Image (tube, rainbow over all chains, first blue to last red; front, side, top):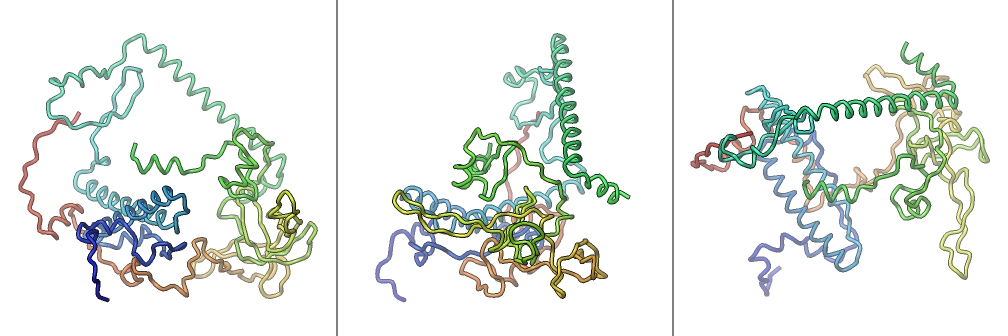
Length: 200
Length: 216
């Protein structure tokens, strides 16, 4: 097929934000299933790298389509395509993270990628403080030194009150569980025999 | 928070704690009309059945034990696990009007009412009688439903996929990966990160030196 007119769009590369012109105006567009984690685990790192950008461009195209459909107040043709692309990208991210985690555990033994430490904040809580990257050491950093990683003595009372609050919440949950069990026993008496037989 | 996560949160349907599951899909127009925000209905007792013990699937033939259509056999079309409900095709129906306007009554259609899991029984495939079913393992190690009376295996029925794909009559579109390419194994485990491998493959040399940063 010879093209007599040459659109400027193709030279700038913007046509990748839009679907194949054959699909413009269609009500439904056929699409396959999303990539599963197991399928992605069999692929090499270069393949995953290429696939990520292919999926990214497809996602951008579908998001443009979604926004345009909202603007025109029309239903988007086949919105499940976007969900499938998002699922595939999440699965890819998960697989890459798994590989990175495995390598890091093997080589260094570190469980977390980002360094951190358990510290007590000014409210007396023990929190996992995630480290940030700074260009200057901590003793020269004005903003960092304004943060207090210690609790004054008057905070101990509030720590005790917080413990009590958590204890009460746990106790309430437990008693709710017991009440639910009792209610279910009344309604479905055969449950207890089934449980006992399955445990034995 | 990441923008994609924020958008996903906005589209996800959050149901109230004591939401009562009905025949309509939660979040649909009909459900929002029936249960507007702030609706509090009496809680229904639902017998807790674990996913391993549940034996009724879409596409199974079951026989109704009690109710209007007792004794009839039908195919399961929908399973609502939250209420232990099973909806059969064309059975246990009541009639209602659809497409009602101010002037006309609309068209009367039969609409199926759900049945609880103990009001139906799976049907033995060979002698077509209702049987109790147990989960047992085959010689191969597969977990299958076996009828207690005759010991025959009841296979899991074929039901069309929710996304409408029929694997037998599928042709790949221009953007789909072919089956061989998707299943091809190209992964060779090596002690290199993805970034290092990609840089090797693309021939990128990193000559920049990493400046000292402090982590705290």
